[in-house]
Length: 243
Ligand code: HEM
Image (cartoon, rainbow, N blue to C red; front, top):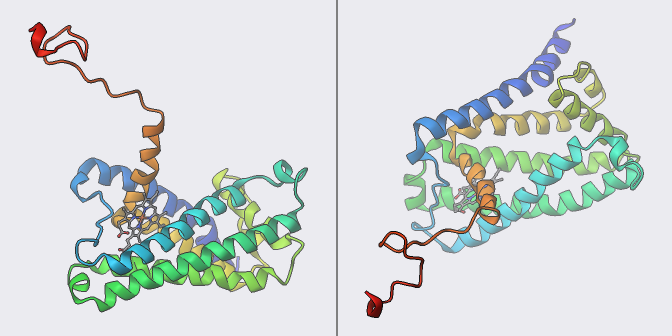
């Protein structure tokens, strides 16, 4: 193996697993050992105005992108092939992902700007808060930069290769790294930073994403039971007259 091959193997064959293990184990350990730090750490009390725009634009964009990547990358080709061709799926991803990417990028730009320029917010920011926003800013910019590259091969061939890489990684199948031989460095840097988001996840405020999805449990949880303080008396049957 030549040394560039070794680097490719380390970054796209080993690093994904390192990131996944740190993401899962790190989140579990932080939840177990440091629950008071488990929060989104909102800065709304320091300045609300631009947060409303920045945060909402960012979250709408990034949540769409999160699910888009999850479903788009991990659904095997044979499942969607009967309904949509790879080329059409790629165009759909470029248009919808491009739109969400622009929203997310505009949002994170506002968030980063207010964090750096508002004295009170900057003083109250940990270095990790700023680094995280910079990481997400670069990552969204790189994602947008892949769109003109994808436009050069509208048959979906590159998308299929990248999705196959992701599917082989998560199903522990060999031969994933070789698939990326022809991918541009823009795709590769985007993938590297995307994995890095998972790596830093447990050490940042990003842990609130678990809780955000966790709130969905409220949709299916049982009703809250309200009981009278007197044992055995059902709610609504403890009027003062009867006591
Ligand atoms: C699961 C659904 C989510 C919910 C309910 C949620 C909720 C929140 C809330 C309440 C805040 C604090 C208020 C604010 O500063 O905007 C926040 C901040 C933040 N969220 Fe989320 N979030 C979710 C998903 C995500 C995702 C997927 C990401 C990125 C990968 C993300 C990244 C951030 C960042 C970076 C901040 C800090 C923004 C700043 O610098 O002020 N969130 N989120």
